Image (cartoon, rainbow, N blue to C red):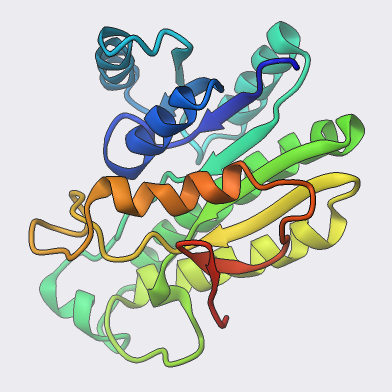
Length: 237
């Protein structure tokens, strides 16, 4: 079998880096991406030191259409395909403590920033990668979402982040409907993990959070598509 080719966004730290590590351990060739190339290169150097030389670094700002087109063109020209796309890049985008708490005080510009990064970033990449996956008859797209993006049980707080993740779940459903062959598109909630975003008090390790992402990235042919999952278990939208 040919080595699977995976792209992971926001991969210089946290969940993106750990998902990259776990995929590389499974034999995937992983392209770690981020908007600060030196930081991604440092992350890749650390993986190489662990013996995971099947990893490389690439510059990618998911808000820049030209970055997306350039990256996909480069990967396709060198490897002839993209088997896995993990849309992990994202930020909380809450300017002040009050804005983190109330939809009544959050600025529309903050919501727009969150949407641009957390939703449209994944939209741009998936739209560009999906035709190659459909043509090849194989692909796994994983959108790293959040329980805060669930409409079921949604309450106040973190409005920019919640809105952007809810919209990301809609992106998942729409692309899943247009996936053909053995191409699957899913959303994954990693749970409250000890990352820069989750903080040191979070209940889950980065390894635990990333495991659900890797599960969706390595689904068998009979695996689900168009769903929302945590630890391989379906969540309500």
